[in-house]
Length: 392
Ligand code: FAD
Image 1: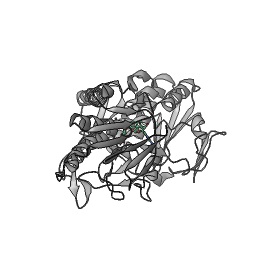
Image 2 (image 1 turned 90 degrees about the vertical axis):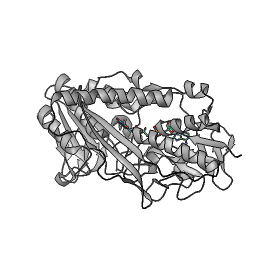
Image 3 (image 1 turned 135 degrees about the vertical axis):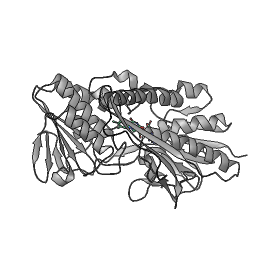
Image 4 (image 1 turned 45 degrees about the horizontal axis):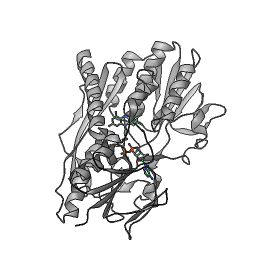
């Protein structure tokens, strides 16, 4: 029976799928160039000096020990008709089903002045690793009374509440370590995830530190100048001591190379099996996929990895996959010991992943400190649990 599955990308989505497929007795090759996976969840705490970078590092020893073959290289091309993946090390892998979980690419063509070179002076830190540490160092070295500018893209992008968690924790850092410093958040939209909860916390905790500028007030960044360290909107030019620019994004390049990304830059999928709408026998999960109402989160990538792996097991056995229900929860910290969350339940409806009406919701708005403390603890527990489940 056909049972060769190739998984591209060893992040939250791909590593999850590879483990389940291997357990089911299929022959699984996971293609991932990095020896160390740097996890993004909780990396905002590293930036604010609240956590060591080592707490973000995970490896593939456990997956390898459990029988998954790891190809430590990247996938360069996919021939969907021949069902082959070409690797950067020159090898070619045949597959019966291919799962892509390659994450995002930062669009260095989308914001005038912001290219890869500019991201050294103005880090995005939207892929964890060297960029995270760079932004942390810049904040630590910032002069007293300095200005931090944080720019947030329009939808869709990886981790909808992530920029606002980052804003909160940078504000915390400034308040406690750099008195008189300011944070200006420039947003390309007017509404965002957990907005009321964030805004309530900012009013209480950071009234003199954090200035939030939505689209309607001129928050859309038009260009940046990484030499002058300035960030321009149509209304004003902000001089920054530290600038974190989170640019627009798209699916990682292998999605385009495989022909599974559409003109939006993201990958349309069938909501039951996560099979590409564009190329048969290729499945796309995680941030790269257009997953309807589901956000681009590690929690979602993990849930999709499970559902997609089960669907691939069914399809290879010529069974029809059952319609899934998927869950997501995104925690954010607005200060140490102050957590908030949003949760949702999703199911296939009218060809997309839609919200299950009435399920899910956010933390209560006017809760006391004990509720916030508990949610901060749940967030820590979630991180420990999911990283152990995915990486061992
Ligand atoms: P990734 O985790 O990015 O993994 C993709 C992998 O594919 C990478 O290891 C990459 O090396 C590999 N790859 C790419 N191209 C190729 C190729 N051609 N060949 C081989 N391998 C390739 N989510 C939460 O649920 N909770 C949070 O609290 C949270 N906080 C976040 C905070 C920040 C600051 C950020 C930026 C994100 C946060 N996220 C959070 C989002 C989460 O990190 C992503 O949604 C998640 O990592 C997506 O998983 P993925 O498998 O799609 O992609």
